[in-house]
Amino acid sequence: MKIVEYNNIETLYSPINGELIVNEEELNHDATTLVGYWVDAAFDDPFLKNNKLKELWEKFESDYNQFEDNGWEKFEKFLSEIDENWICFRMTNYGMCCGPCSITTWNVLSLEK
Image (cartoon, rainbow, N blue to C red; front, side):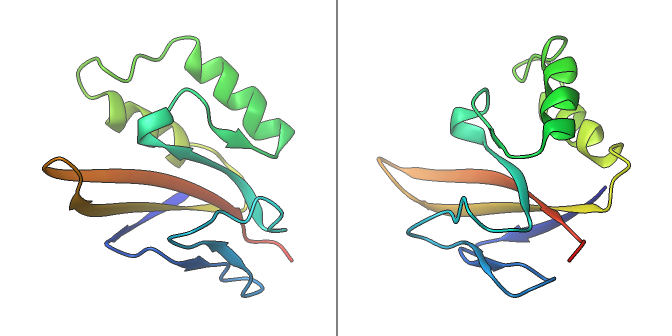
């Protein structure tokens, strides 16, 4: 799966059907092209709609430690090796909350209609 990176973009629409996936106020859990997503602040609690992605994640998660060296790189390698007609949008947004902070999400979308 290809990972496309965006910075400081708060709204994502499906490239397949134009439906809203996420904006600064909400995540559209009912979006037909949404396969799953992760948020770095709650990484161990992803939203996964697809059974195959759930199985792959459970297998990967059992051996994964996000805090070890190159933890995020290993996670993105895991995503990039998934052989499905999906795309991942990695979105990092920066702001201020008790000092400079950032939040990263990985939104996996199906490329099928």
